[in-house]
Image 1: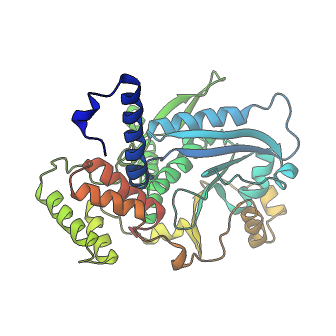
Image 2: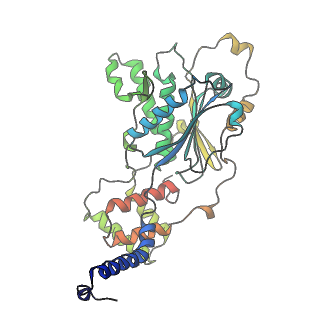
Image 3: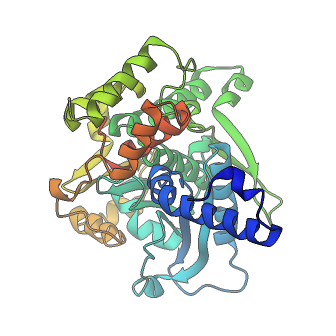
Length: 385
């Protein structure tokens, strides 16, 4: 190795070459460590929206672009980095040949009114949110109808409201919130708004529950549910602990050192990490009614508001509702049948062990460490339920 004081006597060209060589050597040594340590930083959502029509799409069909613009702007309100994979208007027959890209985290399917009446409406649904697997970064689906009941003054019948409602379910799920929180926090917000407009004569006080967004290439204002504030930004981890020298932080550093040296096992350390995560809301009987559990996932259903039955419903009742629901499930592009094997769930990945070691030695910030903990939750490694 060349001593630093000898570099002064080297000609400029050779000096640059030696410094460059040293930088490459350090990169080879530290590169893998840094890569593993910060491998979980990318939290950008890749999403794809398909507007599906009962018949073929025409040149004037542009609702796919409208809903895509609303989706992008709504994600921005949640401070969620996102990229639109592609937006298309396709026919029902074309969808049968559709193959979802592995890069897409969230697939959004919006049915036109004709298709919505044959898929969602027979099941008394305005929309559904579905997730499959333990890893919250992948396998998300949203289905809804581009339908409106203009005979009602309730804005919850508007498609833009349903879209934002389902997107909020997704955001909480993607960020690692517990299943009970994913289901109940948005429905509680919905109920608050319904009660407000149903009982409050001062309608302006109800505006805190909604927002107005104007889509690109449209002059129309769209009403959407206001985002759930605790999910805005990176708030799953308890960032109220801002003092790096607090007793809790110092205790967690000591526990991390014990884990790194195998004094405590993974399970014990996982339990200590849960104290850094916001409290979990317990599910209720109402919660169970709003969701269907699968061996490998769950579904949250948005039930349509009660409406007066017309004569067509009496003359042409749905003979087989189970068959109708199975037809709806055929639109889900991932597996919901086989349970996830525990052996397939990654336990304390190497990149997090590297990050934990650096944090215990105060070589990286609390936020970088907490970001790693949050990613463990999103991957299903650290369970909140």
